[in-house]
Image (cartoon, rainbow, N blue to C red; front, top):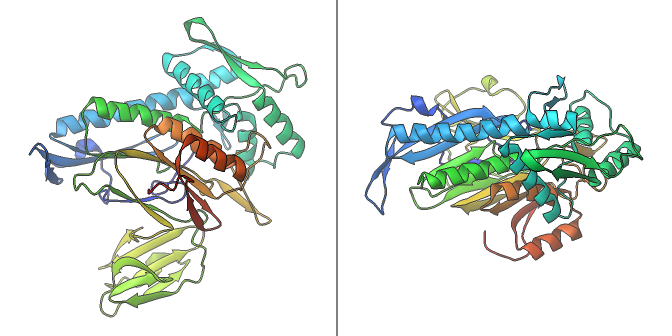
Length: 429
């Protein structure tokens, strides 16, 4: 579940955030302010970040006081830390299995009285399995471990037999919810495959579930202006003080497709392959692209350094300082307000071998990574539901996915072969 802060799995960049994310308690009082046009109150900007759920969570809020901002920050952090403590299955490709979390102990003991929080999360996961007709499956833990080991070069690829067996076991697993929060893992194939117990893996919904709890917390505390970046694959945006919404840019999944881009200056701005970067070209400006470190490029004002390899990365060099990811362009641009954007994509967890991308998004039908599409973003209000939906939609065959999107009137953005398509409703995003 490891994520990079500026990625939304398909490299979503957020503009309007402060250039550095500070701990809320260290933000100075003069960090910037806006006047609410509705109430006339002054709101100051406060930003903070913390590590949780295998990623980095960043929060920007506008509040009338630092004390209130601190309260919101600590409340959000507590929500993610709690969800992390119950939902982490304790497995790491390098360090092996630990049993510190409730979920890890449930997987080991097969029956356990769990906390209210995990009980509710498991109920939610099962409901999403039913809603997606099994394409989101929380019982794929054993196969997930095997594929992640292979992706991380510490294990071998699961055989076709293993893929079929463990996927079948996952499809025939269910939970019994008893009194006093007793949860028991049941499997209809125990007699056929004795000793091959299925494992619960909530990686496809837990962070979105936590983000939805965070959303409710923000609403309950009357927070109007905020942006919550839950590891960039799960974004939650309220209103923006400027009233123009948040600009979300979707970029390519496996890196910029043209490894020899045309970089030129037109009308005083830098262009890449005909796209305006909206970066002003200073007099005497020059550009470079390649795989060298930016430190090896002369940092004169107006220089631009481009890195085109496994990722899209642009560095604007001015007076010897570097600003990363300042290019306001990508494969798609959407404006979002009071909604969440949740993405599933293999961009950060994959292995390329013999021209095939192997990744962590597994089909419960085939037991292996599927590449029907490159990435999908789902837009709506319930982050938990969107998280599970994006996972399920990614592994659906094209015809199944298209029908599911239409039947459920979903707002989605799909990237495939470097091209973008929107949901079949044709709704303007």
